Image (cartoon, rainbow, N blue to C red; front, side, top):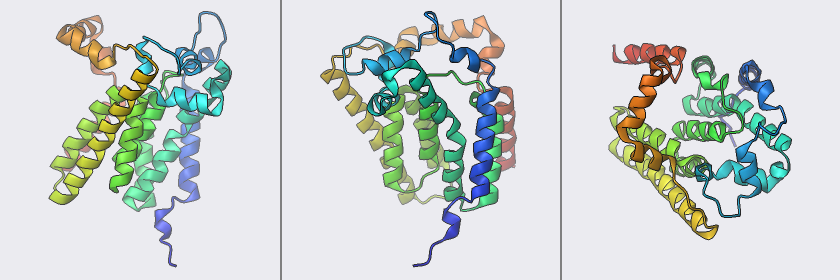
Length: 266
């Protein structure tokens, strides 16, 4: 059987993405403080992972995938082991992105460029909030965006929804708009893609609802907080700091985004 070698990322691409991921991970100025053990430095997701099968009212329980996985493999046994798991997931974002982008583009050079642009511009990789489920959600959403097969799209959306439903809802809505407006896709391909993505998201929400019911979770979700706060919530954040509000994604990310936008529409 003939194997298309371009389907497999080469070693140099994976090594480069790993080294870049390690550099960005250790570049975070708050990393040392995140690993300090004290009564005031509580890792709330680690606490939640220990009690994931018990009733709770905490809004963070909307994100069950990382705490459940930590419980499943025993990483919830201690705060230190939970933090190690979070570190491994954060460092693995770029290698996973390199593998997925290589398969998507079927080109090592394009995958290199993609990883460099993403690594340099996505400021969260060097300024992450340690212990949160965001890195796992980011990895799953990136995986989903770089898939073509309906089953992979469905599974990616499903797991992303279980990791952080609110973030996935917004991200996959944006992805859907991109798919709809892509002129290179046929109508049939667009429909299959949208069905797979939204079915995955719907199933994730149903599984979350079932989990909340079985273990008696009584939550106010992040979406509820935004809906209850309305525009006032965003206006207050805007007034507190104009630069922080508008430059949350990072200045380099916004500049690279608009440069790529102008490149493709020109």
